[in-house]
Length: 428
Ligand code: HOZ
Image 1 (cartoon, rainbow, N blue to C red):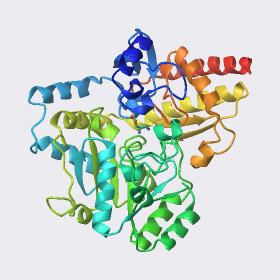
Image 2: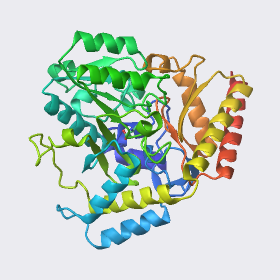
Image 3: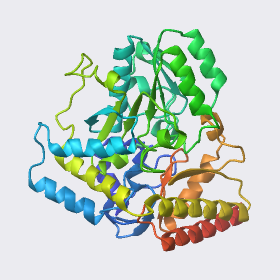
Image 4: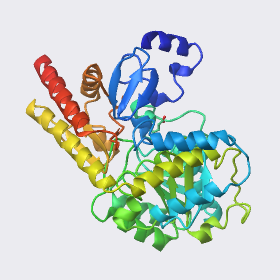
């Protein structure tokens, strides 16, 4: 039983979980304890089957237990789990990454998105010799000290105002600005001229729910960063490979100085990437003095999963055409179901990820995201779960559609949403 599993887990893990977003704190009830997952379906310890839109928080773009990825992982594992020495497969993965992201001229493989962003900002400071970092309100770039200031994702879900344990001096070196507000950025760059090392941005926000940049916003940020000698860091951990074989940099034609990837690039295994301009990456040890290392970096099993995933995405005909069409159909279907039942919602979509906010205001930044009715979201979430649809247990996260979600899955989900909204309307 999920409740029994949680009781046992609470004895050994804070909140019974190994990452706060997995707890059902803001929606109530017991988190699902997962037994297995195949394709679009995930199964809990009670034997219940759900259509899964969490997708391990993004990596599972091919669906769960994809046969080619599993075969590649098993093959690699049979030859050894970790060497702590270079392999040719790492270079093969890097070439695939560079093909998708030409803006990543040189890169380093690491084990998590947090490690990627943390290392990228250290590099930005090391390269520029400047101390300050700009991030956006509600943006979540992993849990490194300087990035947990005004963070989204679980920090937003749990409404944690400021994270104890982060020295004031570190928090003070992170400047926080509202997303989609160019005037605020201009003023900040002028006020701190010559002091800002880097600006890190989710070019499409994912961790306050999905929020798209306004027209020209990213291009203007690029321009301002260049004018002020600030390195532009795109955190594409969530958006990388979500909308195309590449990321927002490809779609928007904006060239960041550094890019961070995670999730899909590791095919469900612990692997992430940071990289960018070759002259900047030349500052990383052993070529340069900025130190960053890892026993499991470029782990052969994780690299095998990444290669198998990227190759499949790249080679499958019409991969993104089908994925994006199904995602748009789902987004439109549940939004229409909400409207038909008299609920005001705003749905933001990027590629194959989207968030439906329970608000009547356009959601363009963290402040507007916070106008959402989180209590209503919780009721909707529980209703959908009862209908066999597994969504992220937070208003401030995204739903991920995978290539394994069939038209029938999408239809079933829209039917479920229609039932749930009708039920919620009747309870009003
Ligand atoms: N970026 C993920 C949530 N938005 C991370 C998942 C986690 O924190 O466990």
